Length: 389
Image: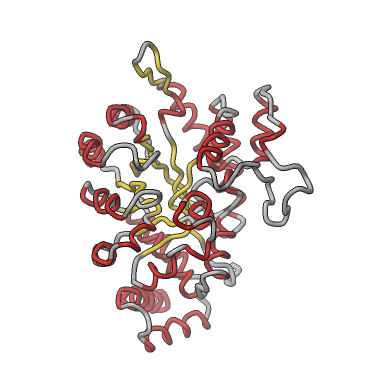
């Protein structure tokens, strides 16, 4: 075990969005599809040290340009075994960087739905074949790396409340042991969380934990509404910085935000393309639980190591704080309690003697928000128990 590595967690990654330029070209060739020359920068036109798997060529200031790129790339995926390639590529690359737990978002609508005369037809066999291929990829990655994976089902909100509800009905009839979460994603400005009452209720009935996209391109009120309807976590949620009362609610209820620095810099207009405007440091210092995520790793040219480095280099998160971020991710994971305890102990095993000294000093100094101090004290107790065991 290399104790200098900080174990990492991803709670927010869309599987189709993980497709890198190199993988997109591989899929296009495999499926005999035209690969547009304008889709990616050519070798020598971008920083290959920063974009190790190629770089898509789209206007980062234009959301429509991003969506068009996403749709083009997604259309290269034609068969269930394409999902094996995507899943294996993403998980193996990030596992090499210390990723030990990941939740992948998948959209049954995009995987297996077609419309026929205004009615949606769900291809059960295709869905099961796709998940079988993803499961196989996970098993193959686990042969080389210590990683645990779970799935979230996405309901695409801009397709309407009926489609989101139908998506969950389809999952009710096609359960899978790795599907532990339900996510309302898509255009945040499309509809209100109140519109999805039937989906909220069915998700609860199916014992699926809820992580809803909110407070990314919409305001703090969208987070308040997501919480009202039972969200256990918030996808992005950076607009919470606008509302001190909401921040207090997040801290008191131990709600975790799934923050994606690179994604937010590109897509959130309020940041004006400058990552230094991101409120991650302010949110953390106010006691809010945060995690670091890749969101659409392939489209944005990122990976989990890059996200942790951004937090460290730009926002000056210390090694101890990065451990806290990872442990917040484990605590918020949509996974059975026995596995959660195992993952928690696995992360704590990476604490060096110096890390434990820094932990003690941070507790003694009491310079952090009381909620952070409480977390640090909990880690100290668990570390002591590990020694005694």
